[in-house]
Length: 262
Length: 227
Image (tube, rainbow over all chains, first blue to last red):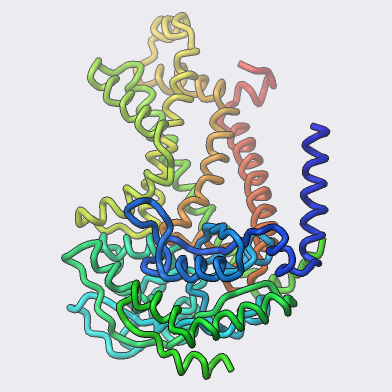
C-alpha cells in the first residue's frame, strides 16, 4: 500500500513537472515522441494485414519521428478523445484527421495545415438529398464531437442526429441498415461502402472543406516552430503529397495549403 | 499540478445532464422490472420444469453470463438490423439489458427459491393452499426476501452498466457526458459530474428498493428480523 501511494505521488509530481517544461526538449531527451492517432479511420489510420498500424496519418507520424531523430510511440485514440489525450499529457502531438476549428483553437495549438479534408452528407442512391432541408425528419448518423456533428446540429435543425462513438461503429450502423444517411469525411466513403456491397454511400452535399493540422498543447513555441517548419518543408518537397496520394488516390492542393499556412 | 478546473459550462448544459439522467432512469426501471419477471420465470422453470426446459434455461443463463454486455448489445442492435429487423437504439438497449439482467436474476432467484425448505411446502399442502397460492406466498415472496440484498445490488449494477448503451447512440447519461465533453473539451470536469450523478442515482435506487422492500415484506416490516 505504501509503495502504491509513493508511486502515485511520484507519478503526480512528474506529471506536474512535464507540464511546465518544454515538450520539444523532453521529446529529444526521452528519444521518443508520443503521437495520438485514431487507427480506426481508414485510410488515415488503420491496421494493415500484418496487424501493423498503417494509413496516411500513421505514415506522416513515422516521417515526422524519423526527421526528429526519435522513436515513434503511437498512442491509440478515438475521435472524441484526441484533444483530452493532449490535455492530460498522454500524447505530445495529435496527427489524426484533426481539422482546424476556432473552438479547438481555444484549447490546443495547431501547426500549419498538412492536408485538406472535405466532409459530406452521404446516403443510399435511392434517397434524394440536395440540401439540408431534405434531411428534415430523417435519421443522420454522425460521430460524436466531430465537425460534422457540430455543423449539422447548427444547420440541419430538422434532422434527427444519431451519434456514434467512432467511425467504425457509424460505418457498421450504415452497413447494417440502422441508418441510411450519414455525415462524414469524403475520404471514408469507399471504406464504408465496401462493408456491404448492397449499400453504397453516395456523396450528396459537400458540407465544408477543412484543413487538417497537427495538434499540440498550448504555449509550446519551440515545438510549434519545429513542427510548422517540418510541415512546410515536406509539403514543398512533395513527401506529404506522396503519402496522401498513396492512401487516398488523390492529390492534396499543396500550394493552397502552403498559402493557408503562411 | 497545472490543471485548472472550469465548471462554468454547467450553467448552460445542465438540462442536457438532466435529460441524460432521466433516460438512464427510464431505461433501467423498465429493464429492471422486465428483468425481474424474466428472471423469476426462468428460475421457476429451472427448478420445476422438465429436463429439456431446465437445459434450455441453463444454456441461456450460461450464454449470457459468460459473454460481455457490450457484445450482446451490438448483436441486438447491429445483428438484428442486418437481418432486417430494425429496432431503435433505445428499444435495442432495453432488450439487451433485460436479456442480460434476466440471466443474472435467474440465478439469484433460484438460490432464494431453493433455500425454501420442503417442510414449508408440505405445510402449505396441509393448509389446502392451491399450487398458485403456494408458489406466490410460500415460495416466491419469502425467496425474494432472502435474496433481496443480492437483487438490489444486481439492479444497481444494471443501472451502472446501462452506460454501455451509449455505444449504440442511446442518449443516456454517459452519452450526454461524451457529447458535452466533445463540445467543451472539459473532459475531466464532465466525468466528475457524471460520476457524482451516477452515485446519486445509485443512492436513490437503494432507498427506493428499501422502501419497496418494506411494502413487499410485511413479516420483515413487523418483526424486523432476517428470515
